[in-house]
Image (cartoon, rainbow, N blue to C red; front, side, top):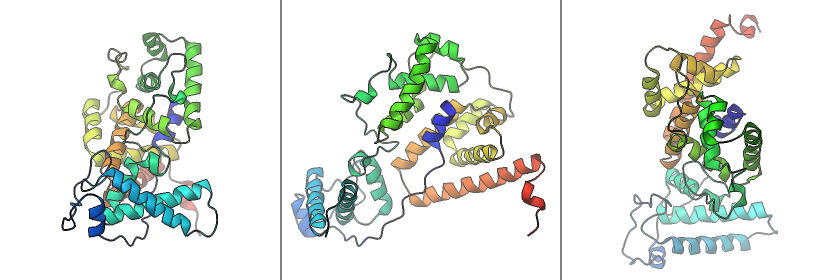
Length: 327
């Protein structure tokens, strides 16, 4: 159950959105005036609010008003009535046009802005930006007393190698109750069209070691590996190339019928839970500091390593079936 859920949460990185062709202009004096700036002032395009990713040279209220005005202009130009999805896309385009006009044409910065405001702009939550509000949303109500944070901590502990019986006893949960909880929380994730529950689960999972009921639980001893498993885990957290290499190796292992998570545990002493928690951290950091050049660089590196490990696993299994086929 957990591996399937992890794969849904942390599968291969999606291809970055194609850069849309723009005719973005630099910030104009009349726009500056509407934002409460003197006409002669020039905006500082390198200054952005770290939470909203809006430029600090204008007020969000003024931006929202300008984006709504642009949306109404685009809407009035349509020859036919638009569906709800088409209206959302048109509003998104209006926001994009105004953002580029007011902040310049930096595609990477706009991607950071879109992710920071993805719930409002696209209707979907993005990993790494705390946009999800649990209060007042019945989908986040505890299930048989097990909150989403508890559920993430339970999953983290079990994936870490702590016996299920031990984890359930620590949380005071009976096995039949857990079985139902373990079905209903993933079901709620499927029911949430914003992916907010899944995103929040990822945030909780990455911080699960801080859950008060997990502090005294220790996983079973990791298998002996070359070097310290603790050193490998620390390297996974700090060395992006090492992380991408193991992602590539794990994917290649699965392609050749091996348990990729088990292969990493046996060779590096890093369990599935710790690996996925680190993956959440890398995903969050990448989203918050989005740079398409860096994203593509690491994607290419992971694919290169995947190819290398595929060749390694193929050799260990006596070569690929198609190696002897001549065309």
